[in-house]
Image 1 (cartoon, rainbow, N blue to C red):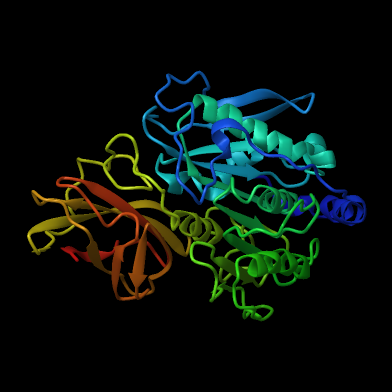
Image 2 (cartoon, one colour):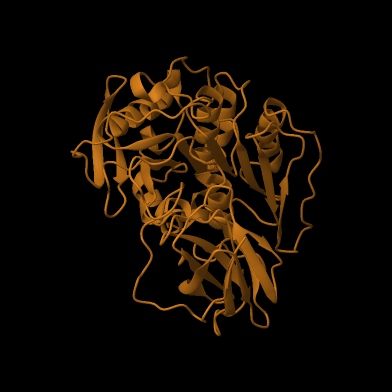
Length: 434
């Protein structure tokens, strides 16, 4: 990712100008198969079953009478009969689609495990003024083009972005509440408009407490729109003190079922990559990608895939078959399961791991629980595709709502990030049917 801090003066100037001049945006939305509400019955997109013509890389598209572009990332081993999650990542002011792509779509690409189609649109003048709704139209046109050619789960569309990209993500949530399943806004403000903004959308806001470009009050305002829309209980979430270099994530209570609101405030300035324990942003060490992925991953598809993948939705690619289980796991109930740990990434003061859970019994199971022991100084900071009990020492991770059911010989994975040295790796790994 490019060095974000060098963009701060330009962003600040644009933020002042746009806040004063941004106008209304046009009504409208997706047509055809893309009209299916993400929270209702899933409809297979027109691209399901087709041999795709789109490929990875920069694509051009006519939108609103202009030639626009976006970068497309299709999962490895794409299966035209499997319905994939779609994530759209908007760049920041003076950033680019290439910046978003090269940074792994805000760090979500390595966590997706080939379950997701990623898109990075390019803004006019490297921003998202959304004049006369032109950028909403671009979002509609890109989504339509992709879904006419590729197989997308229409109940699994997500958007996110930082700074100006966060503003555009908020605008999409306001104007396309039945199209997107959830939105994550990093250090955003209302700069791209909010046409509508009265219907519920699952919302995750992240903001620095002493943001010198877009004050945290702007982020709170965006958040509170969906606190109201989602019927959540109003509250003033805790936020970390200055120089603590920590973050506090709050999940609102009282929200309508299926429409959570989450807020993470961190002790830091204007950055998409805050790091606990440090005042220096770092893309590989930030906690934001893990928490956003966990937020997005909680939403279950409304229908199973058209083919039988190795897991229930959200699907993952088949796990490695060469690595044996770390330890011989126990069995319970009518059959058994195994758990295999794999180190994915590491950095000074932290690491990322993945555990493959396999049903070794001859019959289907409906739930599983994995136990593992963390070494001294190791502590789990985020988990996705699972629910953890405990963060240090002996930890248990149980299946999420959507991946507990495994067919005979089926498998799934969950991942986590942790603080501390990744060596030695977590040990005493066990798996039990629950």
